[in-house]
Image 1 (cartoon, rainbow, N blue to C red):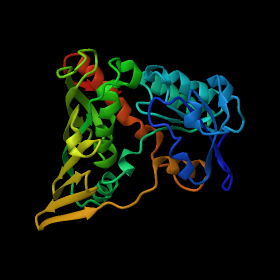
Image 2: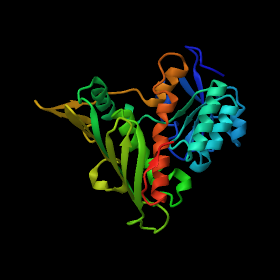
Image 3: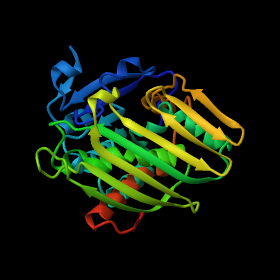
Length: 326
């Protein structure tokens, strides 16, 4: 299919509602419109929207040029992505886009072969306060990055699946944000990871892991750590109880999600920088497909955090050994 000509509106097809589907966001995206839906309730899709009974039927619709995929079962999402690429559609997939490195390799190879674009919903580094933090790192204000510490905490809820196959589980669906803070914000690729997790505190006593900790070796020789859990409390006031701290040879920074600000400390003192309004990741993807802006990330860099959490999950299953990122 290739790129969309500038000035033409991009037709989006939405498949599934297991995740951050684009239905609420698409109305505010310039240059794109919702063309069709599948696996989504009519009340969510909106009046008059063409709703297909089958995924294959929606993929055959010539008005659909980009498919936003939130598959009902995340462990099967790789197959849904491949079907869309084989049907000549660009893809925008919920995280984790897949749950195995082999599937990820297959998808990237198919996209390259067909000339189509594959995206994961990887906008963490473009949200505040992380976008401002990333700019500080890229300017060199911190000097050489040596250590990164990240926390990502969500509330527990009864609707959280006990079966990791449905959404990826704690490490894959929650931890991927933490890894993006390390790789996309701090600018340090992960080479190896060791992780442990626990189901302690799970009210249902099922397979849902409630907390995980990980140590990560970085390609630049530095180190990182991440703490993940479903233990955030309503009194905290925000959905995600999270931060990133990046320590460099000249300064360190830490983020504050409540104020969406970044505090930078160096030898002279400290400075607090407020975040500012940013374009959504979907808008960046649409702009790129319409030939109006560069790609937000190169494909390999965009999905490298997915490779890291796949390795981290393997490590946790194997009792916390270091696992190389494939």
